Length: 320
Length: 115
Image 1 (cartoon, rainbow over the protein chains, first blue to last red):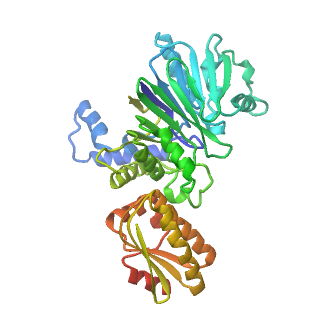
Image 2 (image 1 turned 180 degrees about the vertical axis):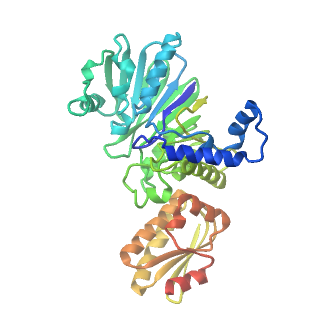
Image 3 (image 1 turned 60 degrees about the horizontal axis):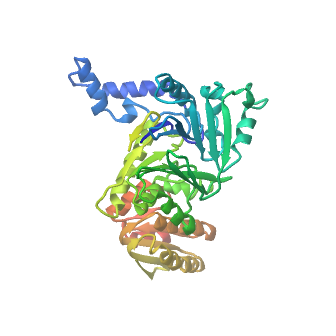
């Protein structure tokens, strides 16, 4: 099973600016002072091993879109944020290479704009013969249709010639697809959101974004910990600092790195992927957030087994 | 978790010890609420002496945040004192160090509240 992150940014896509690229180059050259970088291999090693990810790379700016590859013929995708465009192109490449067929299953957290905005640019949806199955707890068809209606977009939904099937699930429902099992959970967010627990061959991946788990809502807290129980990978909304999440940004619908680690510890999860990054944060700030989250995990670890903490970026692949 | 109340120069000092986690957070909250009312009546403030706290998870931080919000409404001051290195790091990571004035010890905190 492989999890591929195509969009990891929260609320709004962000683009790299010229100033920020220049800043990375300046920092890289400063770090290269005095090093022997006479051959290409030495340069590549220096970039890969000596530079922080915030300098050598970028967390990216596409909004929520995560592919879970169970190894079958079909594609499985969580959310249709702006990362969906790039995923769509790559999926066509893989279909062309005979790895997959044009069958796509989508699991939608909710229809807020940043989670559906990639769909009008999802090329496979225009191709007759492809099939799309779109699962969610909301009326996703209404949201997609409205997004493409006049005057918001020039191409209405019905111009897309792949077949479409919309499936609405309710809280706690379990869907057996044949290839995997998925459980849906309603989450606290404006207008609700839904998390998904995917299971196959003893491996568990939980996609849980856009959820504000209030620390005095013990019922939600305990239920969500059960939802994460023993997961191999938890993809969790860590948009805000703890202080922001329960003060100035209370009721904005998102959680913190602190709550994510606490919940994963209590659930016995193995790997946390920080997700839905604050669009205001640059790469250095996200890296700092990642480093601090690792440190917090170390400080409050209940036993000897460490929770692995990754910071998702556009292009990250996690193999389970 | 232990939470003992003292009065120093009219300031309510809550001397907290042990671990504040999911198991003890509710008791911590119950211990804090009357102290806020008492400080409001006295027109002073509350000092959380956390020098004997060795662990505080998110639910414990939430109680401190509730106290800070209530203090604002009551026009009183809430500060913390005596953070051990681990707790100081947790405050920094959670950004609680941006919300609370932090003193080295309870006496300095009392003096700070008294102004």
